[in-house]
Length: 436
Image (cartoon, rainbow, N blue to C red; front, side, top):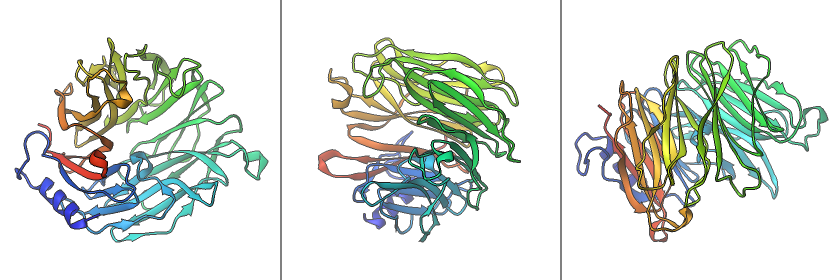
């Protein structure tokens, strides 16, 4: 990877009105990607410092500055490809959680801490023999880690039990707190707000169950939220007010490898209140075989959470959004074109803005996996009631592993992805000025 190119690219993106900065997104800039990079992610700290990661390489920038030298990551550690697995603090310090593989069939849940010019040693986290995990963080850098212990754990009483750990910004994860006993393998979801209130959700035995953890480590009783079909995709979110949202998609039995039809559901609880469940959307299957996806939930206000997902309109797969606040759940808004199949890639908020990133398939009649994709975005400006018109970021090609982030200090959005065109891996970066 040529660091001078990456730094120059980022400086160009930061300069207002620079060459190629056609509204709303700048002309994508490119540089050779790190060896083995399958995705590129960018994250901002609350003070505007940023982290750019791809493959086993990570680089850092000061607020409104360029990325500096690249730091190599330990081999066998997988976290940076998933933006939800990293907490970022001012100074571009990071706390990342992921699976660390070693030996032939051995792995553990581990954390990695570091910052500009320094990456510490890997450290195993979670209870002994933790095998599954979900991780969440807030803008300050506080974090929550939800884990399930392996069936092969030496201590029989912990096998497949579920535990929660909470971290204060700048520190380590606290001691594991048991939230559920043993059972079948579970799907996990967790969320944490600015007050360090934690929403804990798991799904197994066709039941979705939730608990909440207060900043003083008090656990609420387990509550049955709903029931689901054999395949389930689970997510959670909690606003700073304490308003909580759980979303899931349950497919019909027998579909493999992933369900292509079924319903989305959402459960909402007001601050300190009980959950009420309703159907969010239904996908009956499209001609291109686009099916259920994860529902991304982001806090976009002190008492507002916004949901984004891949839904259906007629025979097309489309990207939809809806808000949940004190007035209830808003009607879903379709934010992708109605004449193409689109799939949600990422959804973020910052500086009062909300940005959805999605792939739009070229309509040649092929199945979705054989089509080329364009990379598009939809943006909601601060104070706006709805998202704006679709915005093309990159034309039809192979934009994989895409990510988007919003600088909380300026409102500038940065999108990154790896282009696999021509048999080469190329890092692509583009910027958008603050939405007005």
